[in-house]
Length: 495
Ligand SMILES: *Cc1c(COP(=O)(O)O)cnc(C)c1O
Image (tube, rainbow, N blue to C red):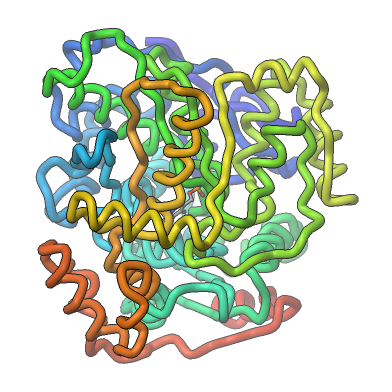
């Protein structure tokens, strides 16, 4: 097997082993770690189609995480993808109304972040051991709702770790908030920030970049790491389910071997769709990568014009995990379509920092031809939920509905009949109010947990344990802060 090592998209670091890249999260120069080259799948599609989720995970992860032993990786995989998931398939593929929904929400917190965050603590503590790290690892995370809870669930009470989560105080769904503020675990801290997700993310990045603070907490026996989707330990586990989905379609006779599929991804920070792009680069037969945005359609504009421009109004939508104007993982794609030119990548990212915008070259634009971008308005998202329910009885969440509506637009626009997998990123139970009022506005009169029971009635899908648990759970985290107080909150927790 090839030894894959990592380098920064901004040129400052090279030849970093996978375990060190996972521990650091972000490179010292502010760039993101990318593999020196993309590994190629070394099992045939037929062989992959006979594998369980865990076996598929090993086949993908062994190619990226070269410095982990087989025993270490299999330990991480078997502890991550176990009965925390409510189905043996881990990521079931469901055929609904002419498309395949890849349900990525069967983990502990019922959103797709569980797919990576249930394994990240194992990868990270294994990596710490391998690198003889004595410090306690402090996970610092900004969340638009789903990452925070999934990271908390993953890291709570994991020895030698602490986790701090910042979320936009008024920018997450009531159930998302309840899930976070009821989190148990002595090593956890959750704080609501008076700002939006981008404020939280910028604040966290600033803390990471603060060398003085890093040295200060180092003296106390701590070091920061990131569980955000910029961590390569988040990205690689997300490649797995695209390979698994293809294998399942092959196994079910939905495809002939080698037949291309399209993939639609409801996109925020660009991690999930980048994983699909990596899967394609590894040899998985994927044709188009369909990038779905909500009304914060910065990626749609970028894919259509070549100009990325965050200078616009930030819109709070019913798909809050996609309410993002700076998609961090896009930097990895930019680096690749720039021909791995770190200087060019740095120049563009500096422009984004200074002016909030940048423009790619025509040559780079051409490299983006496998991507298609579009968006769904709030009204279209609602209509999509109601219509699919009325037609098929299947109830999807708001994020998945954005993807489904963009898929319908794509089909209309192109006539493309390629079989298509829709990344279904959250359980409808996580966004119950938005989902139920989309089905019928009259539901708006009921409280959140009454709506849970109504959803159970109309969808006939059992109420997930993640929801049952928070019905009566006490609020343990009441802290809120201003954007400029985030650093102090961190310091106080690590005193
Ligand atoms: C995080 C999230 C997304 C966006 O995924 P990215 O990898 O950030 O693009 C979409 N839907 C849900 C439900 C999410 O939690």
